[in-house]
Length: 443
Ligand SMILES: [Zn+2]
Image (cartoon, helix red, strand yellow):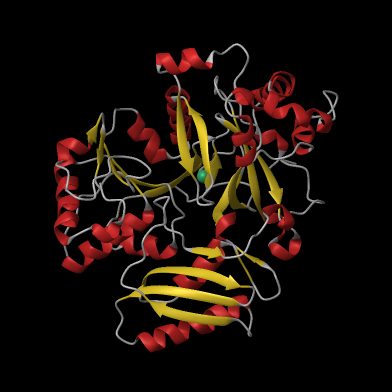
């Protein structure tokens, strides 16, 4: 657990100001006033007493419920200082948010200070190639291939214009590799699943590829399978960046592999799971971004589970804020064992990552005792591989688990453009797994 003194005095001051002005001025938080124990209590205890902000709350009160009274939304939209952007998370709930580029850029810059490679590169104006799903960022063109100049924007080059990587041909993947050599980006930002697919192809051809100074994973949970496939081709240092449209950049992985809170840019409250679901080391995070003059988001439930670092200090020396040893994956990607214990995506991914010969997978829990595993694999003995997967999944979920395994040529991302490695087909309420007796945050 982190000690309270790992935060700067400004951190507590920002936290207090945001809380008090939101409760006083904003209609989205009117019903929260009754929960606030008042200004004689420490700010952490006041936050801990409040509910979490959900996507439904944002829909119900958007936009006026979140905009400070001294801001004119109409004028902000007309001047281009803000715009409304629609996101659809993996929970498939569409939400409209206020986008303020200046705030976003500041949050990104602050996060880069948490990784030595990123700090060094941020001193210039680094060229950046992006291998993402164009549904999330970039330009979509599924029917025809776009020439390089139509995929450039400022210092960025978007390597992919296809919304489904099943549309990637060998010629298109050769083009991506050639463009890396020509563009020579300092940074390659990538969905890990997409970069892994490109790397499987390049490793198969034995092709050498340009090595950027840093690879940043974003948008998706980086599976151990993807990481292994990428490392066959790239020797560049990698870092995961973690955030959301609502919150900006929340955690950045340092060069030692741990995740540091971007505490200059946001407050994070941690809520542990019940001991039987993972104990106090694992929990959900509620994020309160600082410095967004247009959009006051308090205790937003980002929908992910994380694991606190138990060491208490990172060899990199950074100690300003919460340190995580891992992101555990989305709440929407958890599955349950036969006894009802929560299995995070990371726990499942580590099991499947222990099987060699799997390129891609997707696991669906269809009933409380039934699990369907789809696998993409090039191995010859598919029966033995399926047997190994079944045995390992029974060890994870319970002896009586019904496990079916099928092979696919490819697994496509879902309608949001992201790969979904696991999901349960029945409703799960994240709050049911939280420990109400858990310690107050940041203590
Ligand atoms: Zn560190």
